[in-house]
Amino acid sequence: MSCTVVEFVLHGHGLRDRVRPVVCPEEPNYSEYGPSSFIFSGGCYLVDNFCSQIVLQVADFNPQFRHIGLIAKPGDQRLVPTLASLRVFLLERGLEVHLAPSAAKALGLEEQAIPKQELARISDLAIVVGGDGSFLNAAREIVSEDIPLVGINLGRLGFLVDISPDQMIEALSSILQGQYIEDQRFLLEACIGDRHRQLALNDVVLHKWNIARMIEFETWVDGHYVDSQRSDGIIISTPTGSTAYALSGGGPLLQPNLDAIVLVPICPHRLSNRPIVIHGNSEIVIDTSGRTDHEHVRVTCDGQTSLRLAPGEKLVVRKHPRPIRLFHPLNHDHFNLLRAKLGWGGHP
Image (cartoon, rainbow, N blue to C red; front, side, top):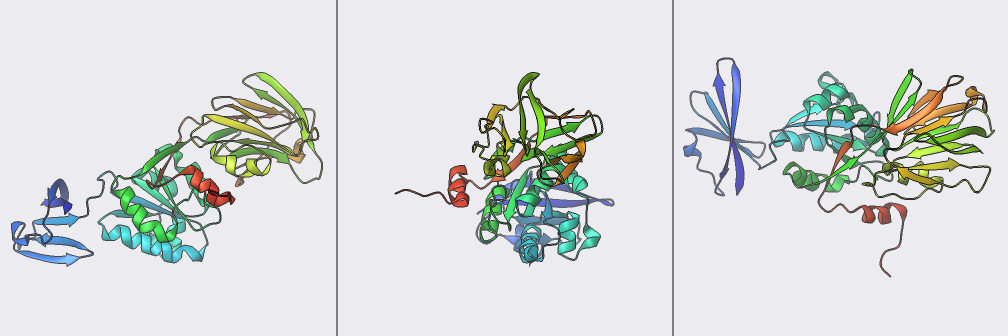
């Protein structure tokens, strides 16, 4: 049985840890470590009579994942049993668990709440319990810390949160042992003048607002004029977002690892206005100046944050320099996911 033995040695008022891998027999020889021992939370804790040394035998988890952050969909009581069992699973394996405010409130542990950005700074891995919307929100907030994300699906479709609650323990056990597929996804950065800057993992959407009338705008890519159109707006989508609003607008499905952006018009007046796929490093400029009352236009990122255009301002969209890191189980297959979520047929 392969295990890791962790020795915690007291030095003054501090506690220093040393880790050494060993191969343990099915029944460990407790006398090798000290005269007294006890069993707690599935691990063997061996303590000598002077309490100066503690040896902890734990499962052979990847040592890079010592601090785990938990993020939950706010206000959804359905996730409490899953979240609670997840926390117990992690604690029983000797891992440090940090709770975002949403997770702390769901568990009734508000005094342990840590702001998301602080949680991302101190955690080695973040687990999101909820739906794709919760995952999108977490990704935007913690991307600056380069922390990997894992999603437990308690929502509807679950393209991003792809681990079901009944597979959670098995999947996370493998991931914590270093058995996972890493998937990097880029975000978009939406800028309006010097006043506003927002991130989007799925899409940036310029759309009509408060009146049932088309808006008019010009589209430019890398300084090149593309077109002028009258429509209900335009979706600027990442490959990740190609299964979301862009798909509803008739856009193509893009493999998540493509370095590409898709521009999808929303209900264009001219049927010849079709989706366009451009390079992921492109800079897109949308100009409504002189064509549409700015009060009738809004910009929305991931369907969650909204920005206003002042007179004369343009929307500039480009790739954010830092991607988000997703961890999937080893059996993850994007096309299996598409078949399951979109109801495609299997083999004849």
